[in-house]
Image 1 (cartoon, rainbow, N blue to C red):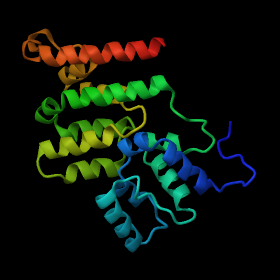
Image 2 (spheres, rainbow, N blue to C red):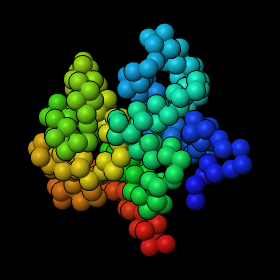
Image 3 (cartoon, helix red, strand yellow):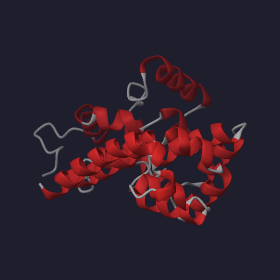
Length: 221
């Protein structure tokens, strides 16, 4: 049903604020206000500065704008930026992620975290970022922000942080890794590392298998 239907006819902004309260944990893990503000042209530079300050002190969700009309613009900015959190802020609930979809995203994030050190040591940020751009996983602005970082490791961290906030990112990311010459890392994240690399990863692979079992169970039930 439509979550905002009531005798008092709440505004769309009120609906979005209510959805933020309902899905706070999900949104908080996948929204960085500082990166979304550039997609909100109606905000003045001073307003953006104030919101960035709130995000720095209290967190990104608390920084969500409260001025009438800005919640809607915030939601649209998330959608325009390709952020998964946008699906939680549509009052119609038409695009609300299913449990299996959430499980896929959670699994992907867990796998990236599991192999984060190896990813930052191995990936060439610029090459992978441009492959992700070609697949629509990253926007031009995302690639620019990645390129601005000093040092490849810092750039990879920035890239991974942006990628895991996007909608349905896991499959295109694995494809981008393969096309950028990092098929071995795609294999690790997929749970199929090369036999020659298994010896030093048994502990991580056991944990990875646990994640895969939990994921498969969620798909069955």
